[in-house]
Image (cartoon, rainbow, N blue to C red; front, top):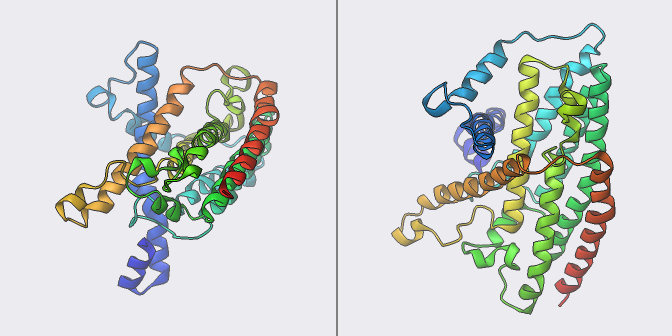
Length: 357
């Protein structure tokens, strides 16, 4: 895909690899993070019957730009009792785990970093780096609040990965692939072919799958909320209990990296949900490029549809944050081990039986 195009034109694999690695950061992740922070503050303001940021730029549009400039200029404080090596590595490792997931996310049929057959497996694997980084940050901070937040986060992520993986397994059984690109291509360009509505085939199997696909969607959406520490599953950062959780001791650019990783994660999990259930980059109504006979317009339409779907689910995450109360630790763990895991396991068995029809 993108790598092949650059590689063939330059003949240098090192330059191609560096360009492809840097592209998502500057083209999408940084602008998205700036936009998402502003969007969240505006959503919070309107839900609470206020305006949100209004001073910097038109209606506060440049507020997050001013904030990131401020964070870059802040002093990088490291306490004397911190483990300096791990304290410095932790935010980088957390960001790398979030950033690496974008390598296999298909934004369109053309804009895809790496077209690998184990895309979902790869994302689940690299997300483990986030857990390592968070634990490292909590331990290296030499702060009880930070350590408690890191331990909560690790337990939460590990617990909610199980129902997520069970839902993913059901897709592997149905489609026989782990490639996010292939899953997007399978659902073609009309909404009735999406897996949330049973998939592209028109048979008795499709109609039997619909209720179980809806259950799978609800399970994975709740699980991904917990994996990115969003309300009502934000106990690792519970301000009323833990000050700020595992990044309490961080300031300046290191704090900004944790912040950037959180918003990158929010879009990454939304993108996975879009690919699995809502057609990926496919249009729900067909393509204008096909109607006009302009083939180069189709990848642009696909990119715009994918971004729109992803941002919609990010918006829902923000909406839930300012609507629902935070769960207690015991309630959070019970939700996974007592409810989501048994339901997702039963759902997997049913989908497997339907797949044999």
